[in-house]
Picture 1 (cartoon, rainbow, N blue to C red):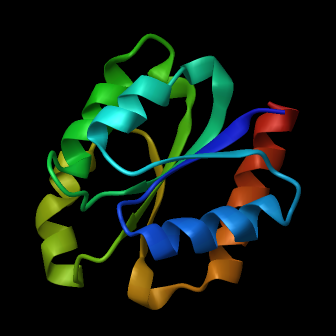
Picture 2: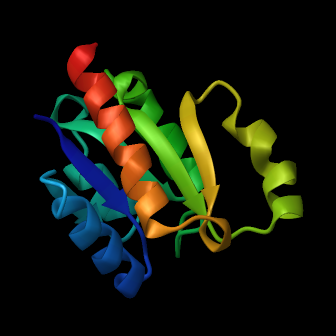
Amino acid sequence: MKKILIVEDDSLLLEVYQKSIQAEGYKVDTAKDYKETLEKFTPSKYGLIILDIMLNGKNGFELLKALRRQQGGNKVKIAIVTGMNTDDLKLNKELLVGLNIIGIYTKSQFSISQLVGVVKYYMEKNESD
């Protein structure tokens, strides 16, 4: 089974996401920033990435593009979680065109159980593909 990579710079949220997803039996790696993510990322290792698009330092849009540029990087499913408000998100959606995103989830509008549901759906789909 492929792992899940969670990229989140908020330590508390990162821990909550990690524990909730691990409780469902998934193997999870974590990263807190651009550099750590690129050091860990190997497309064949991960079935899903949960990416906070508003990271400290280099922004998540640049990270997303860097992940997709790697050989095999387009095959890994990526779900974006964000604290951006709806207006900011609309302004940035054109940056996401062509980057094969499975969903954009606003942190204030979804629960941890919903995130776990997304993980289950896409990880099961990965196994059947």
